[in-house]
Length: 261
Image (cartoon, rainbow, N blue to C red; front, side, top):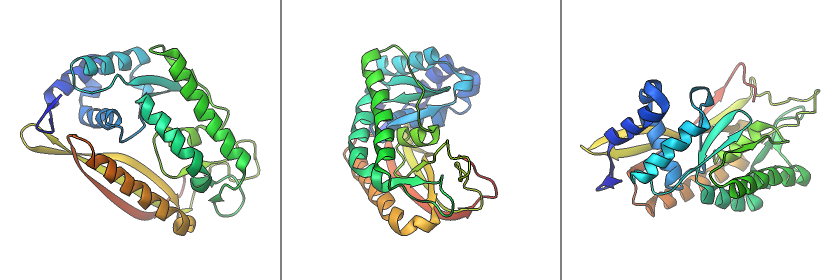
């Protein structure tokens, strides 16, 4: 798979180009690192642009990577709405178990008038968790068959959970008088987690592993949760024999003139 904690980039480039085409080969480093991080259990899933690949292509890709010992686990491909995800099922299950206790503190309601707030409706939390549980059940039952899932809550929430974000946005799609996912001109704390990967030849590659935000008005409540999550991520990395050698976090307050989720 890798020698002395370093990746063989050439093997990954060949396999990615074989299954996803020359266009994907140009951004193979990003694809390679994200798949590797999912395989290592440091990220529950990776959202791949379905406009340039279908499920069979991705399944062929992860199967060959597994058979050639470039990754340690047979990863799962599933579809949510029209988007494809690559995931390690056991990591998603672990993520779900953690969310059962944590989601009530990190689910941000942006459907109400006024400033964003922590969602205090237990029915919403239960509904969101039940949707994720349905998806996990489908993935378990379907084996290597593609699971296609169409959630009954907004996809912003589902995608945030699947990508492992420590802060999740939620809005009421039926509330036509509320914010309905609009964060325009809202001050946000934008968080980026960069990963550094060692390759053969002592070349270090950098890739953004996580990029998410939370409202600045909730910083006192949410930043401690984000820092706690990041420290847990660092601790988890320390237990891995992985080419991923370092993580760095950056936080910056930004305001976007137009931003709808």
